[in-house]
Length: 334
Image 1 (spheres, helix red, strand yellow):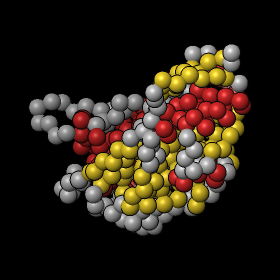
Image 2 (cartoon, helix red, strand yellow):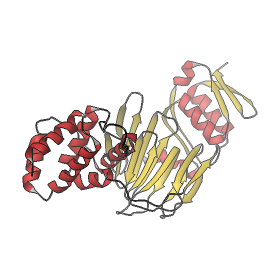
Image 3 (cartoon, helix red, strand yellow):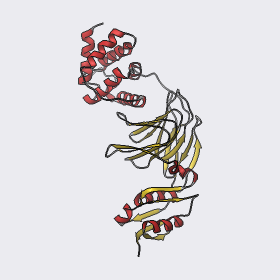
Image 4 (cartoon, one colour):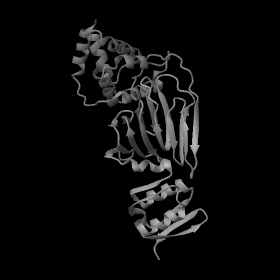
């Protein structure tokens, strides 16, 4: 075992000067480290020269390596000179910390080696228009309720080691348990992973994300950051612009939309109008900023008519409205 060689490889890795061939050699050393105590201690000592305060769960580890192997500089080339594998030194530090401290050397080595051909995954899409909601069952037995104005992309059959889906909008998942195949839902930049549980995800726009857990445990994270691990009756929201996340206790009444109940809990009128547009397939215009910012709480059960809903809200939030077909204009009380 060449001590100087290992030290040099680790330094190159951290300094973003390592080439593809040297990286594969380093991955080989890492995969051996768990069975070779001397090698493990040597690599641990070298890493301790660098400071790192990052920690990730399995979801972040897998997502991180998916991003690494997607880098086009991993492609073979016989004519171009070797290039550093990763674009940022901070990215390297995170990856190295994962490799050496979370004990995923074998996982990393499998990901970074040339993958064996895998069967192509055939995806299907289910789009739910405004004014409708549907319930469906996936191939693994998972039950999904999809809210209006939402789209779910899912495999026709679940093959391989993961069950991955892509959601735009809102859906409630009652996931069939399979410990060998984690269930991962991608919503923009955020990924949510479970094994078998029940939870709701809401991500209608590109910047806002919200998850509510009703049973089991859910891990939520970005590609390089864990946002939180949630259990029953816990929620988490995340804004991709401010980069802020917030955890909070929830009441399961907010999930009554699956049964046709419309629940507003301390909601701004502007946000409520967006919900009503999806719920009833209408267009609502609010030009007055004071009305848009007013907050209220109210419940409407079993698909009450839009007219009944607006009549109640006009009393609570102090506005009047005009209707022309499917267009509603909300304004100050006359």
